Length: 233
Image (tube, rainbow, N blue to C red; front, side, top):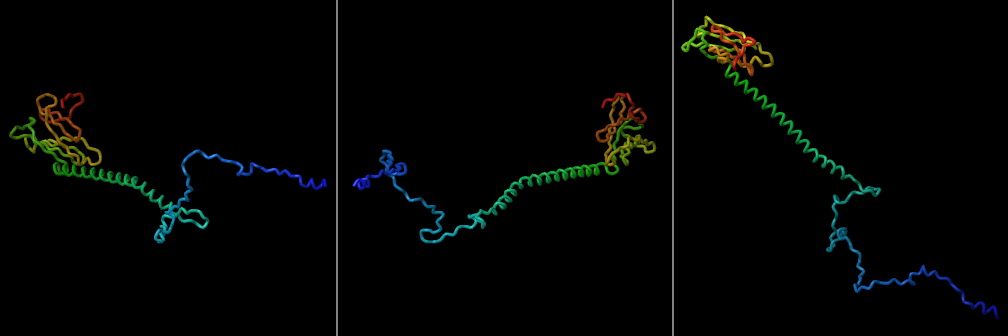
């Protein structure tokens, strides 16, 4: 009899309340707004079927090619890189071409200027370069019969010929300097007459490019300027 009562004794069972979510009450915020569970949005751009049932095929250029291993191919990248490099090279190429054109123009204009100057000298002084003038210097001459002077660049040698009073039988020749340098055989030699020492007689001044040579008139002929002599140019 005692054994039977022991079998009816209630058995205590431990429940882990922490594992049951139904025993916890989550308080809701006091708000009058209603919440609706909206269905997830679909990206209609990725949907190949339109409302009318027509299938839209995607452009192949818009989709990156995929290799067999699932990695997106970068075959388009080299084309973009080459075009970018070409665009960057264009300004540098234009600058180089512009510099070459400017150099060619400078050389052309320089050569053209030299040719024009040579043409003018040929027309004025001839070959060999010759310059002639008349002046009354007091060597058996007069206003009616002035002396005639010829300035010549004869193969780089400066030669002055004087015809006193125009008389060729009493011609005098003055040897000037020798010119050195490329093209000096075509340098014009000219002359003028002025009183540079104040003695009342016209002296002879020879012009060779930027140089001036003075010959003093001694009354019968011309002589080179001596060291120490003062002249007023």
